[in-house]
Length: 290
Image (cartoon, rainbow, N blue to C red; front, side):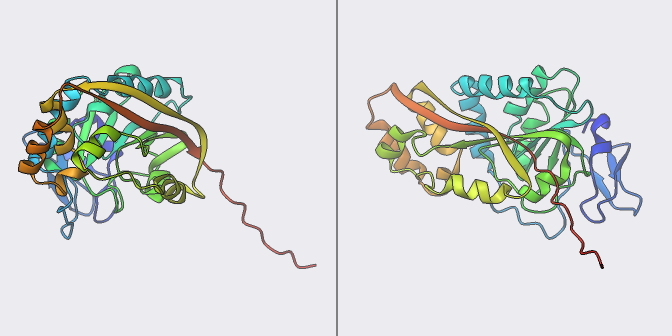
């Protein structure tokens, strides 16, 4: 855990700020959290449930697929959009559901001098993210609970193929900050969905996103990005194993179906990249007594 990002963090129990002492983070109330030897810190409360966290196999598959550069066009789109944003002088780049830290590391490369925070429920992902960038601090936490981050800590928040809590994102985002969200469209990887009987993208995904951010964020820009990838059998196996399909498919069945494909196969990626700003607060009107 980088010492220069600790001032952005909050105790998951009392929400006070944290300080670093040797390899331990502590708050004024005496709660303490060991820094793992791999460099991340676990700030999950004691009653947290991690059953939905990415497994070691899922994280390894994602690392292999991303390292091969298949999503490079998406990275370029994200980085270009992030670099064009007007952001507060202070504040970090926070990636909620950061996985291996692949995307946030490249945004940090483009935003020179910014500190970064990678948040994810998976300790396996956190271990890899801790090596992703020298300005990145990594925290294990739950995206659906209060984030262990201080108010107004982030100048830019990222949610890339990840869950998002609108209230918490609004709380940790500084005035003048921005939120970038990447979600798959119904046509994302459609060739594999059809051939391998994979999960389909919820047709109401856009509506659910709008509801999650309603009242707290306003949409400022959105674009659909589409690009083709040429995937080998190993690439296809990895893309299935790295996401939600890993929970719903048996590896043996996937291997059999992939073997029946004529590879390399051209596969279409299609995602929506949307930019948001905090909505202005609703005025509080009081009746005047005549």
